Length: 477
Figure 1 (cartoon, helix red, strand yellow):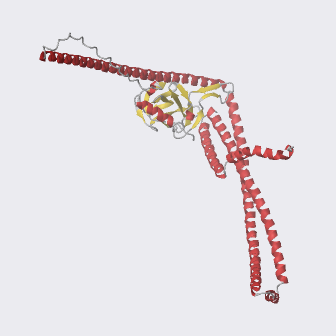
Figure 2 (figure 1 turned 120 degrees about the vertical axis):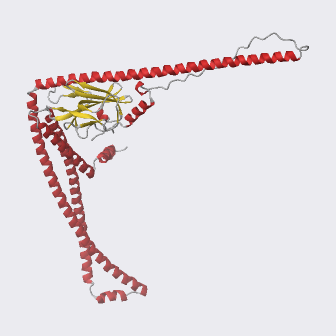
Figure 3 (figure 1 turned 180 degrees about the vertical axis):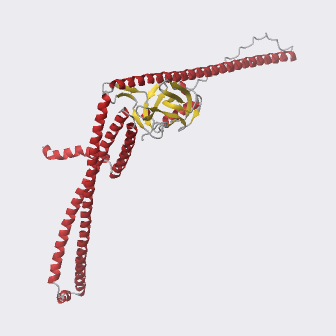
């Protein structure tokens, strides 16, 4: 009977092997950790700049709270990155320890072997003994072999001495490397502790700002209600424009289909008339031929009764051209279809509408930053940027509407086939309805949030009348 207890450790190892291999495969390399560390430090610097800007306002704001939370999140990720780097260093140190132990053991073995060689050489140090060993050979070939043996023995002893020196040098390098790794670990641990101290300071500042903001709930609720009303106005304007575009495209498609049907009917009518005329001409020609034959031979040919004109064979029904199947009425034209396909091809690669900025309001329902019982819903993403920053079109298309929202800035709607990009909260606008725009073309400037002392622009993307999450369309930073 098979003893399962005996093989249980092997079974467990085999079961855990895929997970261990997968974990090893997903573990970032030293270069990736270094790159990630630089990127995180860059993002922390940007968050610090954003915090400096928002602190210029006279009161605490949601912008300060956002910037502090971003800093805390980024710094936590940086600390985790540093800890992974420390793990790498610890691995190098452990490896160095193992190498040093192995080299020390090899060195002791080489020294012991060399000592035995030295003792043997000392005992046989007399030249007479060496010559006696060679000349006591039974034959000349045996003497040659004994001479070669002595030579190889000397060479081996010399190589052993060289190996001892080389191993000693390598051991010293390993010890020096170990010392460097320990110094590096000490420096990294110091950096990690400094980051933890800064993190604690940021958390205290965040809690302080949050406490002060909670004391202004009524003011924040009023601001939420205002933003909600502005968003409703924007949505009404967008829905009106998109539905008008759909209706216009449908009407145009119907008119084109009616014109095509009329042209087909006219073509069929002309073909039927032509066939009837041809049949009548053929019948007349046949009757004339019979009359001519009777006139030439009247004594032999009886004049037949006039034949009723034969009915022409029914013509096969003309093929009615079916209009090409259109998935969406907004893609009824080849240009619109090509623009839609190109827009979809660039999903996740579209540029940001501003040169520099960060997302301060994500798409969809979000919990309010201060009041946990309240949620806010964004129809797009809100991007914080510098005051008066240039806002650019993220894709080529046609401006379908420019709307001024009282108290909410300007709105620019650009169509890209069946897709629409909407730029909300603009302070100034450089385009008008009907303008063709290219990717990256400046269409206006960002609005200003005086409370948070920064510029803002909201980007919305629609597929027909369906909202899209812009974060899945624009490229990641």
